[in-house]
Amino acid sequence: MKNGFLKSFLLLLCFFAFACVPPVYTPTENFNIGTCLGNPDCTQTLTVAHRGNTSFIPYAPENTLAAYEFAWKMGADSIEVDVQSTKDGELVIMHDDTVDRTTNGSGRVEDMTLAEIKELKVISYNKDVPNQHIQTFREALSFLKGKTMIYVDIKTTDIARLVEEIQQEDMIDSCYLLIYSVAEGCAARSQNAFVSLLAAVHTKDEAQEFIDALSPIVMFEMLYEDIKPDVADFIHSKGIKIHMDALGEFDIMGKFGFKLMLNRGVDSIQSDRIDILIPYLRGL
Image 1: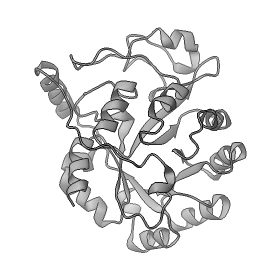
Image 2: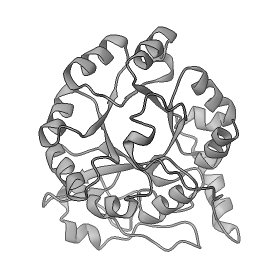
Image 3: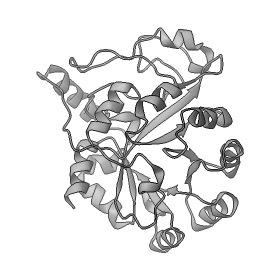
Image 4: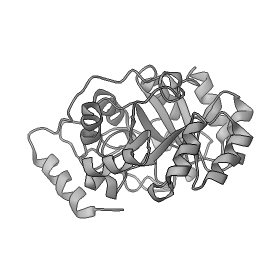
């Protein structure tokens, strides 16, 4: 759900403020999958920073090192990164298919070389944060190593290459990959049998299919309406956690929205409002 007016209003508020500085909390220690995400006995609700930091208030441009730094200092347990391939096969951090929305350039990522991508500036609307540059996947991994877990949203078909780069940074124990099919999971596991997977499902039968083919699964991503009590009980009985995106209406509802999610049995929340979500969860 989009709320363009609210986001524009907050952006202008931030832009004209003397400073646009996010709240700072004690950084997380959940940079290893086994600490909580892969531990069925851990009951902590995990916070995932969408594209690095909140998009409601533009502390820093999304999917940049500045955004990741803010998210880590704000106490996020995990940071979502979007990965795409360039024309010359390099993996870079970018959500959209094109660079038009977030940079001073235009064109499709897949039609640009890494050198061309690196020439672009990612525009910052916070006067205290300079314009950023598009990072390679490995640069993002290196920056986040030892800080948080990394939720990898795969927007490239070269999954084996993606897992290989995670291996090269020695971060298999810190990253988990969002997959939508058993085939994607198999492609990842063919490169490394221990890579952690977050599978998107709607039903108990779909969850069982992933369990049968790719166990262990660390987490299932679900929609609010699909997290029925019997489904949640089934998933938790397998020692697997439930992830849900608060993006949109649940973020707008704030604490009330987050409470609704927790009451459904959600163990991990991806949000654009980590400035509200983190103190809320830590205060429970």
